[in-house]
Image (tube, rainbow, N blue to C red; front, side, top):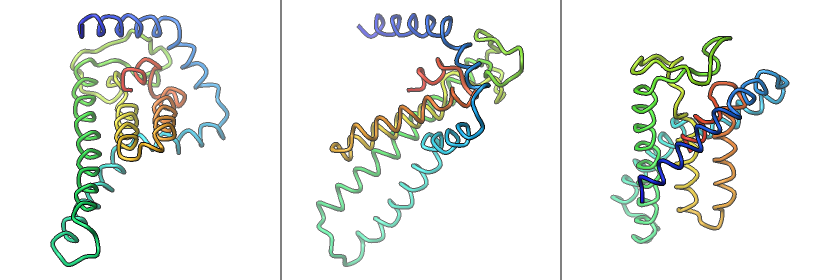
Length: 185
């Protein structure tokens, strides 16, 4: 049932928090600046501005094109419209849920301070330093990767790999705990 799946997931997250969150934060703090520079580029896949902005721009262009004489078949225009709606809906809905959840839970980010602890919470604080769980970038990266995998199934492995790497980059940058990223995914 859904409840047993959720309980198992929460137990697994707790175990990861106890075992891996602090060591991952320590690893993030020790990374070479060149690695951090690469991770900052990779993590942009989880920034919702680009998939939403690009999809909305393409949707507007598609609306204009479909109302004027064009060389495209109605079926291909409908397929593109459906793909854009899937992308916009996936990223926007998952982002809204993650944003609401992270602000209600109020978990401290590993970068909140030198003494930030894995289990520091300030419920309903609505402050950026206390909005770690789940990672919004990880949520967006996963939603975007899954949507692109549905739209372009031949590239599904590539999209899912990119999404996973982008989601986990948040932990390697030290702005999220590993469990924040896993919950976001």
